[in-house]
Image 1 (cartoon, rainbow, N blue to C red):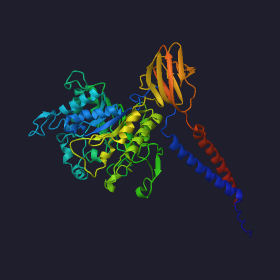
Image 2 (cartoon, rainbow, N blue to C red; image 1 turned 90 degrees about the vertical axis):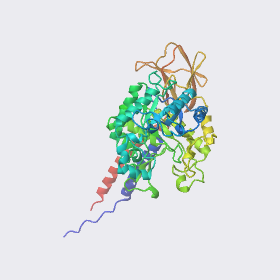
Image 3 (cartoon, helix red, strand yellow; image 1 turned 45 degrees about the vertical axis):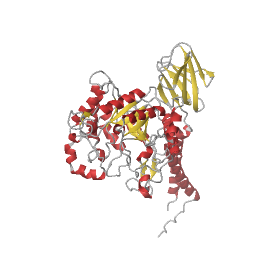
Image 4 (spheres, rainbow, N blue to C red; image 1 turned 180 degrees about the vertical axis):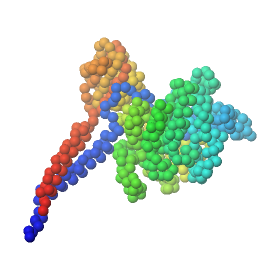
Length: 567
């Protein structure tokens, strides 16, 4: 009987080969992780056409509770502060329940008959719109919060009544979406300035946001959020607005960033938005809206995924996506996957909270670790700068908030007022001054394709000057005759390209940073494009491929050596 063959121990070379294989796999994982943090969402080469409503990014402010200021002078004071800040937009609520209060088609306010008598529910909104127009501030009106008469079924539901005990500010859609459409049509018609059913002074508003945070149960009658039902509501509102004013611009509602693990928000806003697109909602809005709070984090934070820790561990989602400033990139990716990259994104709310130590600890960190007023200002500026440098699809960015307004003083334990740039007693804070200083600088175009009407373009004797930040500039369309170009005071020759049938003049690569181009030409271009250089681009492009080849070779060698170690 023959003895079994002796086991042959793997030679040292086999162990080293296997170790090398695991090291290469670790290197590939690290490269992918780092590439995700360094380059995800960052635009280096822009498309050929400008994305509408993206010049800037421009800055706006949220005017919290402005319709509920008892003193009309507070309205003028608010817009004066917004203008002095350098804001171009102001967003505020126009609650349906505060305008069509008592019944369908009834725009009279009879809530304070004993003291005020019956007054027009439109009157205070007419004053606000007139003040915005006079200040040169574009209003964004947020249309939501149906009156009780329009949602009797919802109010009577046991789910909504139970939800009210958790959040007394709960709301949701009306029983009949046609009622909402009629309200939207009346409001948009009043502020379209066409002379028909206008406000007394023909005040104008162009931008209207349909609803707010419909992905939360507390904003949806305490029913499970339903993107398909929301598309029906959005479509009704948008069609009514466009029928009243074809120039009306419709904003999608800001979705609350969620991880889908809270029963009050049982799906992520990314899944919610994807279902909106699948339900055909893209045609019913012109601008995507995003909420982009810092949550105590630096705006330069580029990581998009994280491993959960002990305090927020979930076996269902041990690795999750972040919900701070960078979250807007994930929203943009949903748009792009659904073929909607031609639309801009506007941040309708962003900010940091500076709650002092006097706020109870359990509430002070509601929105992340509080920051100082100066740091708040620095972070606001940095987030705007990040958008300018990385996101050519970004338009207006509206700070939450200018001031905590309204007739009622806030609860002393509430950290909400500490988002404000201006104190309750109208004193500009350090964050206001930091943002004001930044906005006073000359406009500078960042990465992207921009119209020649951009604020970064100014007329000079015999031509134009463009301030830009990047590493290359191209001029396209409209050019004719001889041109003379200087960049940073030095004459340069731009390379000519007519491969697409249109003349494009393109500079050589420049050091990354701020530059000035001066153009003297018989005709101005239609657009200009700013590109950035991609640091270590060859590494991110070819490093993973090289590692995959090395892994394949190492794996084959390891397999061969293991086979040699048979009995």
